[in-house]
Length: 280
Ligand SMILES: [Zn+2]
Image (cartoon, rainbow, N blue to C red):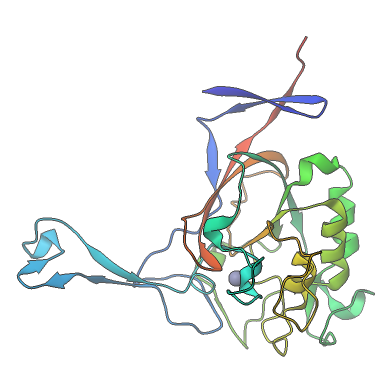
């Protein structure tokens, strides 16, 4: 199916037969990515009375009970409720986020830099081993795009090794994160949905400050309450994997999320290529 999308003064053609998933397939009980040394995602056969949910053990059908930690076991999307009290009126859950079926999205590739070679900042202070995504690195690639194309920004970091699909991020293997300035720049651009192949936009051990999450949603730092200025419909998707065959550029994104009444859920972002066309 070919659909034509009008976005301000441009028309784009999207062929829905060709798409790319950015989700890491989650293999329960098997190899999977892990953040913060969390328990792995598990599947267990349901057993009630004489019923067993496993056709290979004589059951009529397969029924697994799943346990998972959305933030730590793989590709997931989170809302402002990740850092705000669930009971706060503006603390939107995943099930309450308004997502268009397709949204403009820009895919970029960034090499994180050693923090001491940049003038960017972070709270707590940057240490000599920190690797960060800076404002200038984002500016260099995103200034080729119009603001209306950047409703979603998808960031692939280099090196982009296949083992990101099963990597364990911990004290010995600390991932890159964003500087304050980088997030403020994304806010200036009006980015509503940020997707990254890192396990978090904040440092693994950050004294619990979650600085970049607070900046992105405009929640006052050190608080857990949205304010009237908070950007409550924005989302962050972490631990995606972007295949090396996919080129940087402009796409349309379908962000698929189950209606969990929770701050986060596993998700499946799907990209469609966009061909700029002239309409008479
Ligand atoms: Zn998360």
